[in-house]
Image (cartoon, helix red, strand yellow):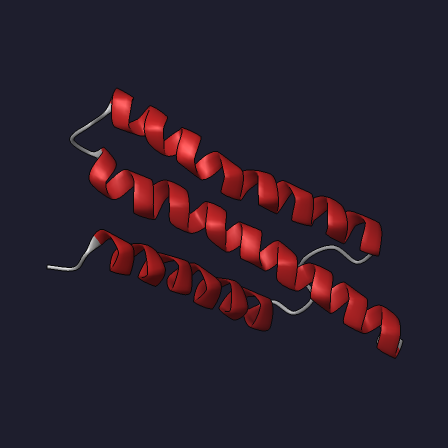
Length: 102
């Protein structure tokens, strides 16, 4: 049996891996200006902050199914989006500094 802490670490590692894969698979997806990249990053941070509240609401509404819904239906997609927006900001900064066209 895996501990809750180990599962949480693996969930975060999985979301980071998915974010890197999405950024590599679709290199032209995402914002093209720094302003929209920062706005997306703020939305990603808000999404990560919403995980605990949405998880609590799911636990109250559907206690039997929340064991699978919270980590895989709420936390994984929202954390993946949050990490992906951070990668988009880094990519936008890199392209601005190296004058690489989109």
